[in-house]
Amino acid sequence: MGTKILTLLALAAAFSAAPARADELPAAPKCGDPSFVPTSIAATHRVPEYPPQSVSKNETGVAVLRVLIGMDGAPVSVAILKSSGFDSLDATAAKYVKENWRWEPLPQKCAPAGFGTEVTVRWATKDVRHVIDFSRFMQRSELVAVRPEDFPAGSFEKKEKGVTAVLAFVPKDGKIVETHVIASSDHPDLDARAEELVKSRYTMSPVMRDGAAMESWVILAVDWNEAVELAEINEIMKKMGLPPLSFPPGPNNIKPASPDAPAH
View 1 (cartoon, rainbow, N blue to C red):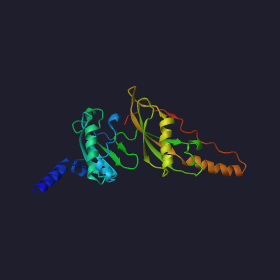
View 2 (view 1 turned 180 degrees about the vertical axis):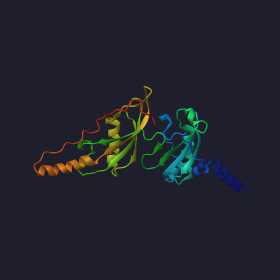
View 3 (view 1 turned 60 degrees about the vertical axis):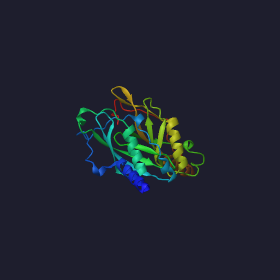
View 4 (view 1 turned 135 degrees about the vertical axis):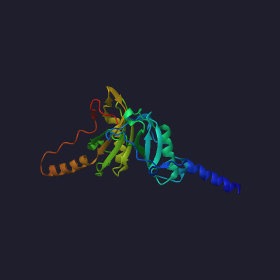
């Protein structure tokens, strides 16, 4: 009898602690301005720790959360818009975002309802996990061309191709130190090299607002296709006795941001 009572109490506690479903809530407010997005405090937008029991069970999935941001920039409520397929992952994601994520205080035009946004948390036990806050994603996106020498050893000769999409955090000094692969080239060696290139050789001028540098996120699409295709074309050109085409300059770039660009 005692065991049954404890079990019922545990189930009741779990049910009461479970985050709300998005379809149980009213539509997310948008401050009456479709173009408005709140300014995220990027240092707080981090990935939650993986629940140990979920790791042992190899539970993975993607949870999409609806977050209601209060006037002070703190989440008022977090609901599950799309489940990862596992209650423990959904609850962990919702709890972490509610307790830790913050935005700058909202303008008065958002009063009193606040602002609704979506946050995606991708749970994966075998590769890099990442979070996407759609209220500030994307600030910018850039295409990164590479040269043959940028390829991992042996991959250029094997004609490995594809595009690696890298989500990069740009701090106020513009030096990229945090990256996440969000779309694979289908070649793990190319994906790993893409992150190395972005961190070591790619600098972004920070977004400016009112003369002050702001933190932001950017997608860098590392294109492995052009170098391989140019090499194939140059092989044909050589056979025809024609001069080769030039390779792109490579990712030694500094990408400036527009002055006072809106920080998402």
